[in-house]
Length: 285
Image (cartoon, rainbow, N blue to C red; front, top):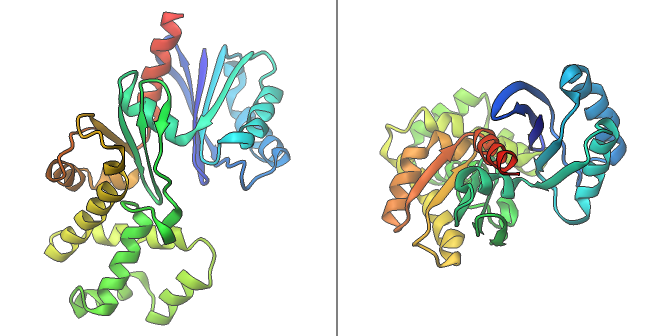
């Protein structure tokens, strides 16, 4: 039995797998060691939310945890907390969500991988590890291709005349907001990136408006120009995970082809690819 976890700051998906077959799926709140203490991860998430749901599945030979913020010294608090609630598990691996994405979409083949959700990230992958990563820099300084940046571009367009005034009025009515409310959400309230990314729901439902289709494609073009192109490997396939990649996969594929890249795998979640990756690894051991 192995346990695979895919964790963002909002939600963690846990999947127990036995000989390639899914035994149980469990969800808890997200784990991010940059923002949460070891004590909170242990008591507030693992003991309070995860363990009451696992019971007989508790005995695992391996745990593979992929999460936001799981880099460098931050990984130890997650690993030690997992070791406390799974004391019989000797092999516990804690890695970044980006490596999880790369293993999910590329498997054991060389390639490029991207996360396109509320935020964005990308890497060059050698079939086992990340060998290059253009820093995403967040939605203010970077994160091209993300939902947050798409929302930012949309607001700029509706208020500065890049899209019809009727669309501005329709969006504000749909969201129940005024111009002042928008400014408040972006500049004064917490988690502005999540608000900006939430606008993607409106955009997706209005893709018949040519200006919006172009806005989405421009966001993806910027992602390729400022991130993927920096790896200088157009010969390699590109795979992507995340809500934005999945929902707009047709437009993402169009832009990839226009920019000279082959988009191969697109998953909303990396879990299915990770199940395949680690099940094959377990069988080969």
